[in-house]
Length: 249
Image 1 (cartoon, rainbow, N blue to C red):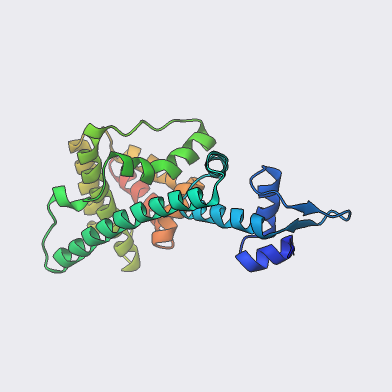
Image 2 (image 1 turned 180 degrees about the horizontal axis):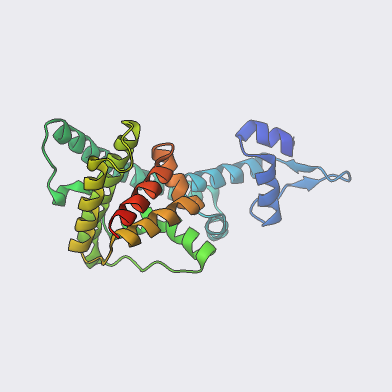
C-alpha cells in the first residue's frame, strides 16, 4: 500500500512541510513520484520515518540522523542502537528525578541539599549533552563556540547551575507574587546573585548583569527559555536589573 504525503502526515503527526524537507535533504526519499508530482511512500519508507522520529526524540540533529541511518542501514541494528540510547536517557532521567524529589522534600522541611548531591547524575558528558542545543544555537547565530566542558569544571558547574536555578525560581516567584522590580526582596535577590557570581570566579557588576538580562530578552532562544518557566519573566528580569544598575550609579 502506498501513502501520499498528506496521508503520511495524518498517520504519523509529521507535518507535510517536514516531509518535504526530509525529501529535499535526502533523509527520507519517497518510493515513487507520480507524473503529477505526488510523492508516494510505502512500508519501507514508513519504517525509516519511524527511525527518524526515534532519533529526533533523542534530540539528534537531522544531519546526525542522516549519518546514523547511513552508518546503520539495518533496521534491527538501528532500532537496537536507539533502544540503548533511550534506556541510557531513561536511567539519567530517573537519577535526575530522584535528585529533584529529594530537593523538594528538603525544601519543604526548610533544609538545603548538600552541594555534592544537588546535581547527582550530571557528569562531563551529560553536561555536554545538556548544553548541546544552546551551543549549537550560539554557534549558528553568533559564530561563537562555547568552551568545551572539562572534567575539572563539573563540580563548579553543578554548584553554579543550582544557584542560577534558585535565582530564576525566586525571581519567578517574585513576579507571580506581584512584587515591584525595586522591592527590597528583589534587590536582595540581585545582590546575592552578583555576590555568588563574584565569589565563584566571575567579574560581574550590576551593569554587566543588566546587559546580560537585556541580551536574554532580545535573543529568541534565551527569552523562550525564561518565558517557558514564567510568562513575563524575561521582561521582569530585564527591567529589575536595569533599575538595579541605575540605582548603583
